[in-house]
Length: 230
Image 1 (cartoon, rainbow, N blue to C red):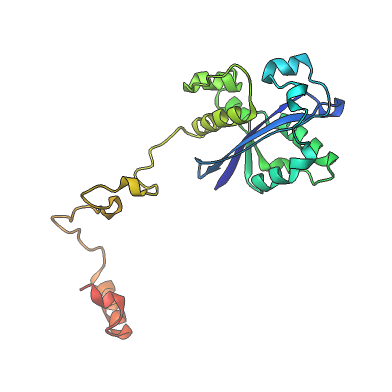
Image 2: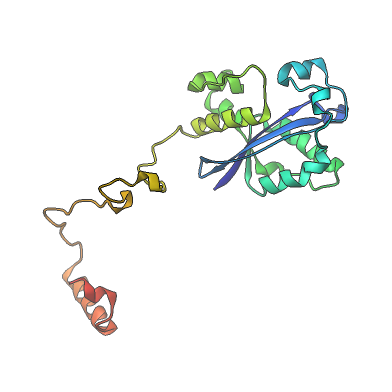
């Protein structure tokens, strides 16, 4: 199961008032595990940067002036996301901006059903509590080590929060893929097998079932795989 945990930074709160996306960050998860693949892009909003927005993310109009326009990166972003579920904190905000930008580039909008809102999950799990990303980090003991917001950093933090919200990190019980580094001098890690039982478990087959199975194997001939187990 592929999921994209993502975040955006903007010039303000409302694209209908002229605000634009200035940064997109995204982290890929597969079966709830980070794959190491990320997407990150600064974007030229072609407008000034309000003081309030600058205080949040520290991205100035001067810094963004030589960055690509959203129209230039839109397809690469869509290719990275694909049809995967997008995990977003306060998804309504980011989806509103993303779909506005896509509409301005005459591209199809992202379906709202593709977004998974971690803020809604947190509010249901912790009703009445503070459920901002920072508050959830404090609740789960996740160290943020940041002074300003950043789309990629916030996506990485949100990925950790999301995993806690859906049940917490669980050990993989050695079911994950074993790398070459996991092979020791005593042999390959994947060669392990449980020890043989001192007393075999009793069969659950009835005499009639055992006889029917025997007759079926005999019909298959001597090359039948079941004939090897007597």
